[in-house]
Length: 98
Image (cartoon, rainbow, N blue to C red; front, side, top):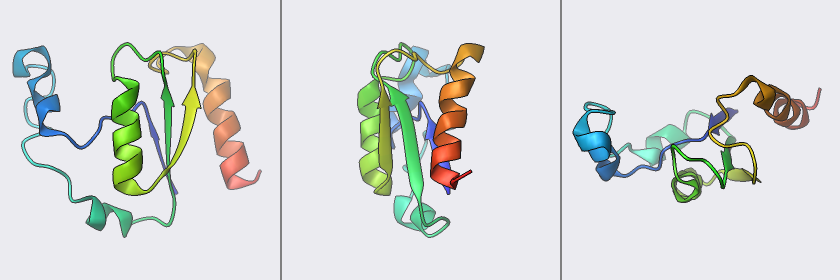
């Protein structure tokens, strides 16, 4: 299983963020999601619709590209704060059945 948290979509224009300085080499080519899908039986995307760094729509986009399960939050931002750990752990517990 692969869990993506606040993930980018598979769009080349992401490389232009902050005048191309944010991720200069990461988005030169689109990712072949068909090949990525072969690496795991299950993909999950966790994204908050109030993320101020990676827009929620990008999480929706990569969810569609990977035929993943989308878990939406409304008040977790970009998930970088320590108080978000219990939310991530809860998803892990539920999805891994422990």
